[in-house]
View 1: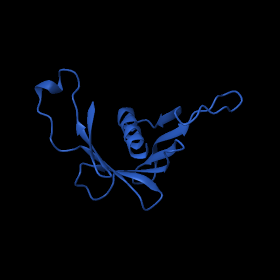
View 2: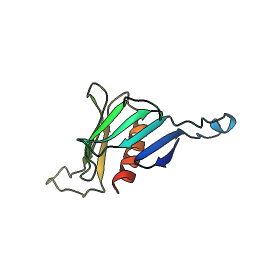
View 3: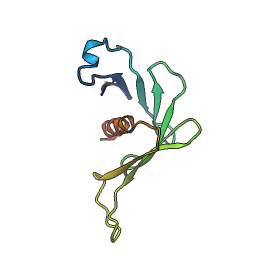
View 4: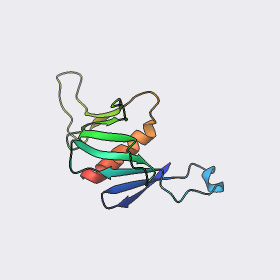
Length: 124
């Protein structure tokens, strides 16, 4: 499990505890990820490895308010995508509170959900 920390327009992700395994090991005091809100361009946020990286590892684009956004890597490959859920019959929309998180193979689904939680903090 990962822990979240907050700075102004930055959300820090720290290594967390998983069962008894991490209770016996010393946890790092340095963040493993940093998510920074973007206010200037099409990107919603940038995801950096640690807090001192100059280049983002991932960029999040789209509209979290409308639950329509994507997590992209440096080559612009979509790794995860948030979409509003719609009923199969009749195209009924459930509203923005109900959405689908599609995660590509090889991308950590727990990390993808962590990014959703951070986006919710940023835009709520």
